[in-house]
Length: 427
Ligand code: PLP
Image 1 (cartoon, rainbow, N blue to C red):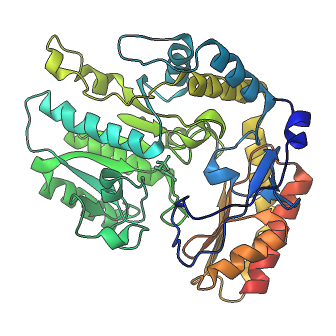
Image 2 (cartoon, rainbow, N blue to C red):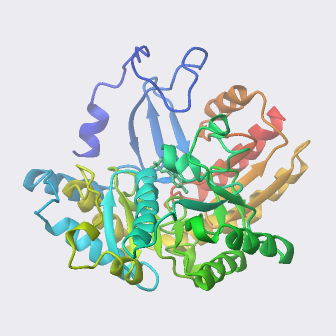
């Protein structure tokens, strides 16, 4: 569909708001959602004619901007030819090609790509791979995961269980989920010793270790050093434990390298990706396993197969979108654009350090963060951003920016300055 046709579509619609159950929303008291009728580049166009610069890439997905014609064209071509087909017993070119490209791009021997439709499910699959890898070796009772305070890995029951149990967004479920083993990130000799002691104390029951790489996202946008990730890898290696690295937020350039693991020079046993995989067009995720992990399933016995198969796994249109997104990474200077975003943060975010009460201002790659002591009037702050023409969605006590990489310098500077000004006015 051409952009001309899109803008010619009738714009106004009134959200009825009674039947659509919105995410993370108290439906009884929440302000109405803003109706979006179209989007292009970095702008969301609202039904009332306003447009907003998207400062968060629609939950960190639209790295090439909205409806990039190369991705839209690839999806349309694919839908006309083969919009969907089951992967059980059948295969198709977009999935085969994407799996091969992801295997080539992913660090080390991460060579085996299992597709699904959402980030949470890819983490579940990675966890299942770890548990079954022990069962397939005749080792039983290894069912628990070591995860980290401040971590976030999704909203399903198993993925909630590996989020921060106390301060994370799923704290309400404390005590109602599978009990995992929660560690502090090993950031110095003391926490490293505690982490290693925990691994040893639970040696008989640990199936694997799950972490985000270099930044804990939805748990608070906290950065940690490559050395910490290397420490986690080394501790797992010493004990033969599978390490799952969740690159759902960081994958595809957000920290300036294609995958954040690259910055630490480590290779996980399973890496999960989603979000920017299709450039924010269609849902797709993958658990990418190392050769070593895959070999635990490479047996003569059918019973050793990975018993998993989401209906829409490897949907051809979604795979075509992801292939087109990877084309754009090859053809256009996306990682340089991330470096430019980082440079703009370095110039324009420091003034936020004067905001009354501010706790911290930090940035890395295309992630910029203003941490406040608490955001009690969050709705007022959110409305302030919309009134100022930017789409910025603070959570907890965190105001953050993760714009599309293609944002122009002018829009970027406007976005950062506006975010600082609105936060300051609200503080
Ligand atoms: N893991 C990480 C690191 C994430 O940031 C997210 C989503 O924000 C998820 C997992 C869950 O992905 P999804 O929302 O696609 O289920």
